[in-house]
Length: 105
Image 1 (cartoon, rainbow, N blue to C red):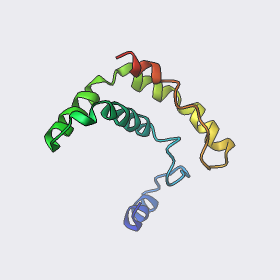
Image 2 (cartoon, rainbow, N blue to C red; image 1 turned 90 degrees about the vertical axis):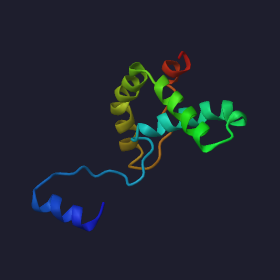
Image 3 (cartoon, rainbow, N blue to C red; image 1 turned 90 degrees about the horizontal axis):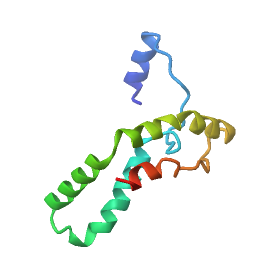
Image 4 (spheres, helix red, strand yellow; image 1 turned 120 degrees about the vertical axis):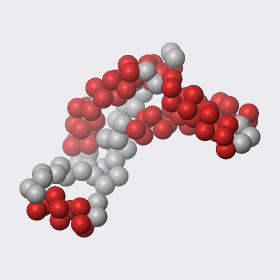
C-alpha cells in the first residue's frame, strides 16, 4: 500500500488487519488462478494466438460455479487458523477441499 493511502487511512481512523504481504493461503483467487492454469495446460497445444488464449481463459472462467466460490469462501476460517498457527508463515493448508466442485463441471 502506498504511503499516501496509509496516511489517508490513518487520518480517517480506518482500522486495518495485520496481514501478511504475500499470503496465497489467505488469497482465494490463487486457487482460481491455479485451476485456470491446470485447465489451460490441457489445451495449450491448441492455442496459437493471443485471442485464442483470451477465449480459452474466458471459457474456463465461465465454468467456475457459485458452489466452488462458496466452498473457497467457507475455508477462510480454517485458512486463518492455519496462518495464525504458522505465525504468519506459509502453511500446508489443504487446498484441495473445493477441488471436487470444479472437477465435476
